[in-house]
Length: 335
Length: 288
Image: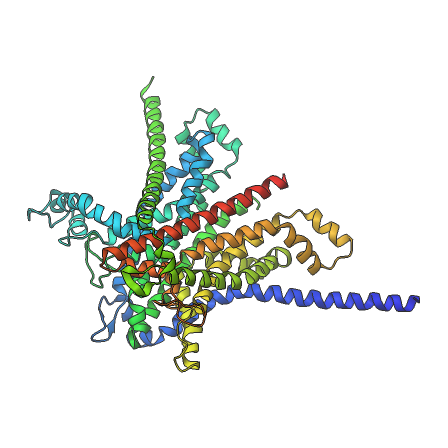
């Protein structure tokens, strides 16, 4: 083989490799752009589907509580309120419990117990949401209606069994309205909030536990050397150091709670009527879509799409804040 | 012992107690949910679950829903795996410090927790509506559309694990291959992806565990079908969808069937997460 032909072969091979390299790069980049396309597509498709509702009702869509398929009038207020109220209750319950779990697993528990307990809590995150929904519908909602609800309405509500205002309802302004109900079943905004709380606890607590472990040991040891108790180290050293990531974890849980469909649909009672009581049934954006979309036509379908667009935008913003907050701690660590 | 010291001691003891209680509450709910699923599920287990279809109602089983779930999940994983692995590879190997790469990594994390019902509506708009229009209504909802919706949910999970696993591969491996004159694409396919293989498989299993319980995206894509459907272009039933339908039915015996379905799904998901954990722990040992 002559020298000239071997350089030819070499050149051919280099050129071929370069071509393959370019193709490979484009293929990879194309696949990565699909992620972008999925997000933009979901926002675009729901906005497009909801254009009719937005055009018909304008800003009024956001503030109207009317949802009347008979007269073809739709407003987003009831499902939006349901989504926000259930998510807020969920966070109110889940945040302190998650903090407790994270504190227990990072500071309190003996070393041999940490991994098994952490795995068990993570197991809770793996259970499909429809199982939470079923458990809520068949087990927890009846339990709630039988044991907890009577106590709540009798002691806090304005519609107790004996027809008398409870002491709290008489003396504290809003509480009586929140807990008064003559609806006999368990399914309600409060129960949906509790089921959601159980669902998001593993998410929030695992983020908190992870970030608690990033606190430099010398920092904690210095505080211990100055005589701090475990709680004082957790409250004055660990929490301030990880504050942004802890808020990020909470927002991550909020993002989950806002968009959750199955766990809440089962226990929300599916009522499109606005009620001041947390013990009355309600609806959320996701459960309104799940319940009505397959039978909806025309403007109602468009209104549901518009709701989906609102949900998508709100969760996007919440998750954006969550990720930015989580990233702050990561950059502090130089990761 | 002065008052301040006492107060600090009490505060500390109280905090420790409350944090232990919080953990017990979390574990109690886990136990409660699993216990009920096991109890109600096992008492409803029956051979007809696997042999009869849902068309028989309360005398029927869940055979078509199980087959449907398998097909839809398979379609979802088959679509999401190649795209997810390639996208994750791009993030880790080609765009690690670039602006576009960082933004896509960031947006992928958001897609990871995006509401699944919106993904269902998205696929409804881009697949169900056009296929209805193109075939004059003979193909409307389909198992394939359900698979695409699930793929959108599995995708970010696979992208993220692939990305993370590839970044764990030691740089010396790359340098060794490059110094032999291997082009970068060959290095990626034949060395890096192979080195991170078990991690990537774990990601795919986790994605499968995630999508096999998803209900919301299937309601308006695969829709449901009371008869056995094998062709992915037909309406297709799935376990989560049948659970949703049966749990909302007033009949007690339908509830038993729903619990049986819930039991099957829970066992499947727990098994998957156990297997993926085992794979991951084994690779960790081999790296040390």
